[in-house]
Amino acid sequence: MRELIDSAVRLRNLKRTLAQRTDLTLHSRYLNLAITSMERYLNALLDEFKDRYKPIADKQRIYEASFSYGLLQDPPNRTPPPNSPWEEIRTLPRMAEFRQKRTSEVHQSDDYRQQFTDPLSLASWILTSELVNFSGKRVETNIPAAHSGTQQWLEDLSHTLALDRDE
Image 1 (cartoon, rainbow, N blue to C red):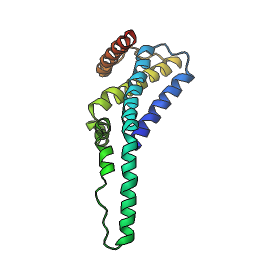
Image 2: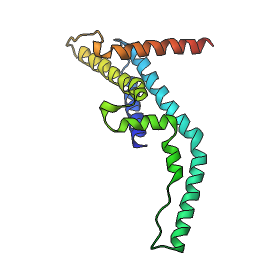
Image 3: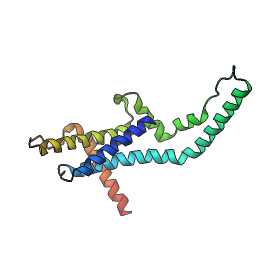
């Protein structure tokens, strides 16, 4: 869950930076789409967790009470039984996919990379370019080729959002 909180903090920091800057013009469309992508990813993850959390939490309370009771009955020889509620949380589809990214940045899950870290990277590049340009120095204003895949993903997201609004 720490990774989920860290991702939400990164998004909040980005949104806070944008709220403080009203003079951003360079690639603002992609910046807004990047934020939308990251919000949608985190919201889907949180929705899954909220929808499934209550029954799992109830099972966890039963597990803990049962284990505590067992310790009172036979404390020295008691080993914990498998924690099936924790296993249920770990196997929630979106949560399991999100947790895959923990091993290293190189092995990030596809959804997390495409919908969160790549848009975050592009947004960081845009904000850095704006800051450098604002300071009077001129830098390349074309989005680097390294972000072309993210750019395409955000264009596709833009079309999806437009279709959703039309329905």
